[in-house]
Length: 417
Figure 1 (cartoon, rainbow, N blue to C red):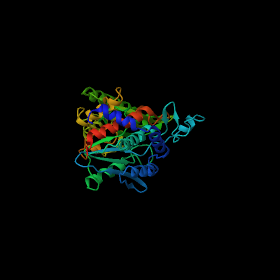
Figure 2: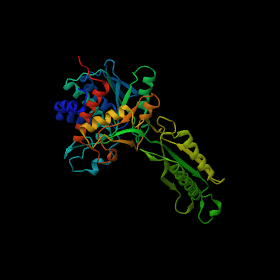
Figure 3: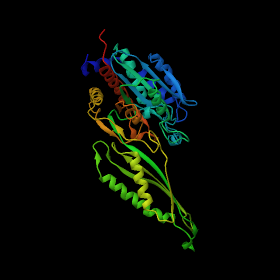
Figure 4: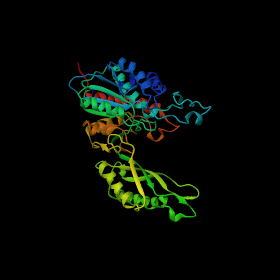
């Protein structure tokens, strides 16, 4: 049983759609906004116990747990599925859908073959797909040579005060480095990718800049130092710098680097603006260095400022790096990429393509800090995550389970005894 065809047929015959739909619904109903991940961990623990994964729960900060599990094999590789348990706040979801079937953001309502809810795509469908795939192998009587492990961590999403710093995956990574947890050989991070394979991702930094001059009454503007006028020159210098780095080269899967100014605030009604604040985000490509990129940006800003204007620059979104998130990835023709792509395409010929991740997630903790080849792959569309339209097509979810099961079997190896 090495070809995809017979394996896919066998697995498909044993997929219980009602059971896996219930699993995903229970996951979505376990409301776990960043900072309150415990509800999802409590939901996962009995499911992982049922799958003989010997789950272990450990706080990465007080009251905020990670959960890990592992089913030991023999001589085959150790394949990890990893994802985050937290979701972004539903915000005005209930008001947006007032009186509609999907009014409850954690209701897991099924409409026209799609399961709705905050976290359905980002990324509880991915977590459930990976667990249901192992369950499907058991139902089909397939025993593995290798090991399958799971790590579900908190604090990936940003937006909640004091959270969203990747504290969960950092704690897990440190545990692996210290020898408390086994280092996997390969990993799939179950971010939503529409069942495409994403072996490479962008990096980023976010900067908050404050220019300070001197406010003055509009009738005597010569007594002031106009921070907003100074910002005009600084912003133009930033945009020129963005054009230069964009023109320097591109990545076949990720496009070009750039800097985007995302907000500006200054002044009042009748006075010289004494202060101007603006924010920006920079996109990095594999091979770009965060320290070098942020140093270049600082130099560009300071060179554009007049002597009578003070400047403060803060990089506010440290992740795997104190200044931001590193770009990361593996080769597009890595054996894991080819095997996962083939497994998905065998179930869904329109999926399984290799693409780049136009977002940042926690891949660098695995690829850079642990040296573990990692890809992103799962059902769900990242473009509707964090919106009031978050949902997952159940057909994609079901197909993902079968494809993941085949990928696990062919990657870890199938016992013949």
